[in-house]
Image 1 (tube, rainbow, N blue to C red):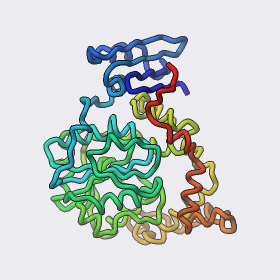
Image 2 (cartoon, helix red, strand yellow):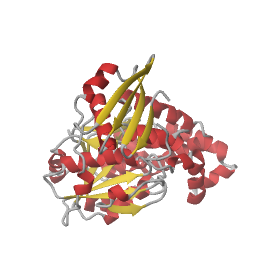
Image 3 (cartoon, one colour):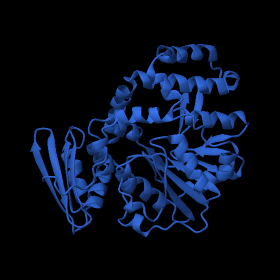
Length: 387
């Protein structure tokens, strides 16, 4: 890697590429550090440099330092420790968290807490992975769900939510808008079923992304939530079209947010996921580098033929459920798409991998085989790490 982090509670050292982060930007960012924090910049060689941050709250200081370098928001220390779930929350903020816990601690959750200060909220953490230190999340509702399953995780979170509204967050986004709650609730009170600041597109079909996706809890439950047949992928498009087919409005809302797409997928398939978790969590990587890592991760993931089989199977299920609607509403050539996705599934009809579509345990085992589970399970701070 062109970037590397070594982390202890009182010291964080980051090696980085000066092609991605300039020495000038690093020096400028250092000027904003608290007096009790010591920071040393070392130009280690051509194209390389290190920042060594030490002192009390070194982890928080290092995260804010690189947030400043990369143009991400900064947050005061202690927000998670001071937070308490409201006894009568208006909004339940539900975070699905397989592995990206350090980024959640330094970016996602501080962004929610700070930008929701004027409203009663609760935060529900749905753990869908392993190797996470749960102590920093003790003030929040904690639930356990199936490994990396998006649909099951969000549905579980909503079932335990107490707010009139639910806001669903992926583990690679944050809000940067102190008015995000009234901005999201206004169109819901005006008749919209769901709002999001971001839509993807598939064959002109809109896909509402959970960055966040905000709905009335009762409406989410009324449509059945996410279809739990989908393990990872297509579930967000299926929910969007389910709402639209029921003549319910799904709107884009102007909320300031950031979606650093693909962190979760990258952690699943990367050969050094522990190091990647540190890089994400200390906000070391510029957005362009994160996009590059995600692209490589998707290529690696799709090099597994059974992943393409699942992609074909999931899209065929979606087309069977919604084909007539998307053909009339979005002019999708459904027969052509059916042929395309059948060709992705058919080569596996007589293989053991075909069982993944009906046997969830075998599917999860196959996903686990993609991971470097031992590396993912390593603690954030390791006293044995040499400096």
